[in-house]
Length: 221
Image 1 (tube, rainbow, N blue to C red):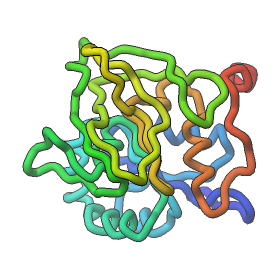
Image 2 (cartoon, rainbow, N blue to C red):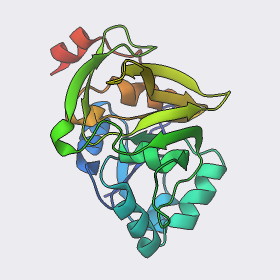
Image 3 (cartoon, rainbow, N blue to C red):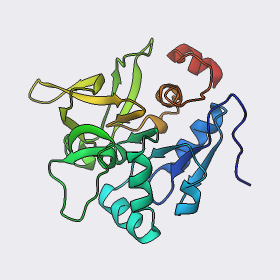
């Protein structure tokens, strides 16, 4: 049974479920009381008011979007202003430009950023860090796995968090433009719902909650 959006609450949130860690996103949204469903075909997309694009493998997702028939319907919905949250590969797909992308790889231009894939290295170079994120009281623990990084931001893009690269420069890893929020890392893997709460607050009718502190999150568990 598809969850139903409640009057005065958040609209039905879709989670792109073609590949990647979509189940973890669904669990976090359920913990927040946000009605959510998997999106696998265009008919599913028609039922949701916003979309989470999870981490995974961005080139594989591109191919699956084509084979599922979702590519063009999703492009239209994003162009029409549908709120979206993208994490890791999801950030790559929502970006305006992939500076090292493949010719057959799609991106939707939902947020005016340029991203570089695998900016921190391969799987063995994965790492974790505590980030100060604008709008959150306490640091957010972030897991970076073959993560992208933002190389350019447009004039209307807010940079909410940065991380220091090996050469000492700081690069954006959480960005927002209007109803679109993206992160280089995987907030769903540590079970901290606060980035998802920031995302829900961009929707026309959202959960009327304040972003939790890290202590609130620990107590809730």
